[in-house]
Every structure is written in structure tokens, then in C-alpha cells.
Amino acid sequence: MASSDGTETETPDFPAARRHLLTELIRFVAVLRRDGVAVPASGTLDAARALAAVGIADERRVEAALRASLLAETADGDAFDEAFPTFWHRIRSGLDRIATAHDGPSPAGDEGADGDDREADDAAPADDSERDDAAEPGLLDDAEPPEMDADGDGDPTVKIPTDRRHVAGDRPTDESREESDGRRYSAVGESALVEADVPAPSSEERAAAGRFVDALSSLPGRRRRRSPTGPAVDARGALRASLQTGGAPIDLPRDAPTPSELRCCLLVDVSGSVLDTVDRGALLALGERVATSARDARVFLFDTDFAEATAAFADPARSPADALRAAEIEWGGGTKIGHALGELRRTAPHAVDRRTVVVVVSDGLDVGDPALFTDGITWLSDRADGVVWLNPLAVSPSFEPASRGMSDAAPYVDGLFGFAAASDLAEAARQIERRGLGGPIGYEHDPRRTGGAPGGGRGRTDDETGTGDAGEGGVV
Image (cartoon, rainbow, N blue to C red):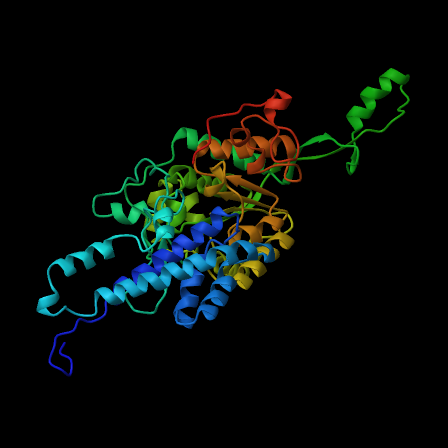
């Protein structure tokens, strides 16, 4: 492009400026989290949108936008105030360097050594703080900056690096390796039909799923058990006891039906972030077991869409993956948990009642409307007999339910367990068998997480009582 004086000028490097801004934003969020700030899972995404709205010309407006997007607790304000000046300095100095580097070619007489010096200066860190941060661990040095959507709507998607290995049958091809290395956590995403090469659940996975479903039994069956507050007198027990007192019954034992049947509603998050983390064989085995063994079962799959899959999982002629594919059910899209709960309430409200145990399989990383999510989880908790949440991220020893969706759901959940493989289902079943949905259960009581030490601040682990098996090491 020619200027008015006839000299050539270059178009400013807007992609470089955008890349610099988003990279520094990710670095800033990492610093906050390192300092103990509970930044929501969607905080970086929200902050990028806020900066797109307010711009970066006014420091006060930028600070206010980031404070509103990244902080959930007033107590985190001090850490934010300490980290923001460095973030602002890095943003401005980096943009200045980019602008200087694209002011246009220098006159012929200025080229040569000066040009080399300028390039060397651009390659060097701007100041000591940048050099220190570059060598500092835990700042997502090898993370990719967020990318903007091709339609230009300014909605960034963030790649989060993960050390989780791909499960058998789901190893990435060369073409998809870059995408598989970091799944985009976003409210949007492309769904696809269930892959034809997804393996059928193994016998181990089916056994673990069966044990878990049996442990959830909530409806009375034909068998009865002794109960001090049971609704009926145990006539046989009273007769046997009277033999010790000359035929005169002193106490009348009571009994109640033993819960051996299950009414279950299974909600499975099949977004890309979940499918990249959980063993798909174990996931399909769980859906198959619920659909085929519960007295009354409903199975729903959701990402950005919501679909019932009960008939596909109950099909005895096909494997679960083949049945889902034949039913043209898709998975692997984005994440909208609140939307799914709202669709359940709107389209299938009778799938949940006071006798129903609801099992939710999701990482809890909801990036939809927070009000919609809160309304959905409170409705679910009020209506169901119990809510069990299986979170693939909870298998990590450092997991805490701090993301926006999971932190909102935690108070309404009877048990929050890790679930990435069949062994995790077996551990959840063991805890529910011993303590029930009303007892101290959940990821914090998993002896694989606590190493056999008293865990979670409630109850005792099996290592303390000497009655349990610790199982295999936790999966991260």
C-alpha cells in the first residue's frame, strides 16, 4: 500500500497483536490460579469476550472487565491487584514492539547494522519481568493461544493441554493429532456420528457397570430385611423369638422390603472434552447396563444437542456403539449442560420422580447460561430420590469442584465420583454399597486418592477399617 508521499507502508500485523493479547491473557489467568484464585473454567473465554467489547485503550476499563470475568470471590481481589500491573505492562510493551516492527521499511541508508540490531531487540525479552516469567514453571508456556472463529464473530475457543492418554481404539490419526492434543472447551463444536471402530465394552467394563448399577437400587423388591422402623411385623422372626420365652412374644420384630430394583435416569455428556478423557468402553457399558437391567430406565446423551438413546442401549442385537450409529445419534460436540437439563425438564419431565436415581456423567465444564444451569440442577435435586455425578476430571488427585458448573452443582449432588475407567465405577459402587447415598461418599473418600490415609475429613477409608480393597492407582 502506498502512502501520500509515495513510500511503501505495511499493513499493521493485527494477527500478531491478537495472538500476543490472547497469549498474555492465558498467562495472566495461569498466574492468578497459581496464586490460589478460583478462576472459573470459562474465565479465560469470558475475559477474551470482555476485552473484545471494551478494547484495550483504557487501563481502568480493562481492569474492570477482567476483574468481573475472572474473580468469583471478593477475597481474591488482592491477588488480582498484585498481578494486574505486570499483565498490563506486558500487554502494552508487546503491542508497542509489534507496532514498531511494522512501521514500514527503513530508508536505504538505515538498513544494515541498525536493522540487525532492531531484529535482535525484538527477539529479546522486553524487560526482566518477561525473562523471569519465561523461566517460571506452571504458566502454560507450551499452550497454544486461543483461536478466533472463522466467521469473525469474535468468539474465541481455548485449547487446554492435557496429559490424559487416549483410550484404546481412540488414538488420533496424523491428521487429527493436533486437534486431539488439546480439546476445545466451548459452547460450540461439531458433532459426528459414533465411530464405527469404537470397541464393544469388555467383560471387565460390563462387570464394573453392573456392580455400580446394582449398588444404586432404590426400589423395593420381593426380598425383605429386618428393620426397626419397617412397615410390617416380621411374623416368622417373632415366632422364632417366642420359642425362647415359652411361646409368648416379648418383642415384635419388624421388616421392610429390600431395595433391589432401580428406577434410573442416566444423563451422559458426550461432548468432546468428556470423550477425550473417559474410557468409551466403560461409558457405553454403563449406558447398556442401565437400559437393560433397571426396572424403569431412561438414557439421554447431550453435548450442544439433547437426544434420548434408551432404545439404542437396550438393543440386544447390536453393540452399544453400533446401535447408536444406526440410530444416527451424534456425539463429540460442545458443552451445554444447563441447556440439556432444561430440555430434560421440558421434553421428558416424567423421566425423573421421587423414586428415581439420576446419574450424570459430565466434566461439569458448562459454558452456557449460568442461570439455566442453576435452575436445571435445583429442579433435578428437588425431584429425584438421589443425584450421583461421575466426573472424568475427578480421578486426578488434585481435583476440586472449582469450575463454574461443577461448583454450582456440588451442593445438590449426593455423591461426586471420578470416572475415567471401569475401576472408577467399581470404586463408586463399593462406597455406595457400604454407606448408601446418604453417607460419606465421593471422590474425596477414594483410598486411591488419599493413599489409605483418613480422607476427605468425613468417615474412614477402607484401609482404616481393614475391609476394603484399594484397587489400582488413580488415573490422571
